[in-house]
Length: 186
Image (cartoon, rainbow, N blue to C red; front, top):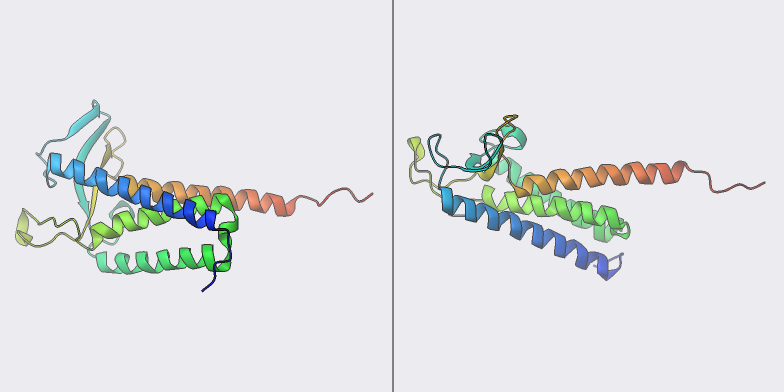
């Protein structure tokens, strides 16, 4: 298989994807080792009192808790998306565009950060309810904007959103470039 893009695009993609995933997994590990499994009466760390806290939460669904209990479906979709991203960037050649390469690297970092959790790789066990001692197949979340009661999220989620935003920006800019006239022929 031959890449149809410069090697520096592959390097940038891998650097962002690996670093983003490592930061996500490292922060999840740190906060869960410090605060433990989610507990409504458990500890949290107030960063901005009454507004922003670090707290632990598990989500075995998708965005905003949609699709609870469908973790294996989301894990499968994550793998398919990651393969599709790599194919589109490096075989089809979309990585010729810097912004698209960076955007999809962020998305890939988010995919793998959350996929790691969905597969139960952190080794967490349920400590309450009927599933005591069973492996946890859920995404570890820990960032909470208490003021607006925004769903608890993590760095991987942030990378997914930032990547999607950069993709929208790319679509807007590339659409405008195509719409501009080639020049004045008179």
